[in-house]
Length: 192
Image (cartoon, rainbow, N blue to C red; front, side):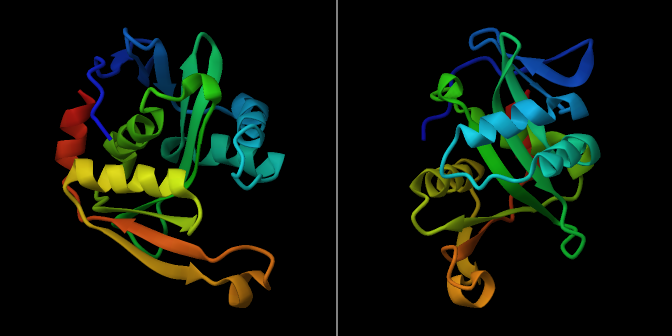
């Protein structure tokens, strides 16, 4: 994955976390509860993502706004990353879901949104990023391999939730992908 030559997002006065790139006209911001329906629609338009309930997406926008991010272009949501800080692992940030619309692809939105999330004060102390990915999700593996490479960090892959044991045969095994340790200051500097 090549690093984008686009100008990095700059904060706007309206929202200190909101950002816009002059060359791509994409703005990053924290979600608000009213974004719930649009987030649900974006996820539905991005197979093979698992659809969460509308209520789950609403709670993510409301209760986990510091761990989620929206990318907007011309007033439309074109990207979404949800995550959280696992209570059992204070140094980790769990990426729950990454969705980028067809309109938003080709702009490195996924990696830029994740880096912007990790640069927030709410993620102070994070040294590792974790997620779960099925073996056949090549797009997600590519994203996380690229992030590990860009951050100069290791990417570990181990089975976490097994098809038979945890999903009663109804879902593929989810592998834990763990990137780190990484230098958050380096990620912060890349953001601007």
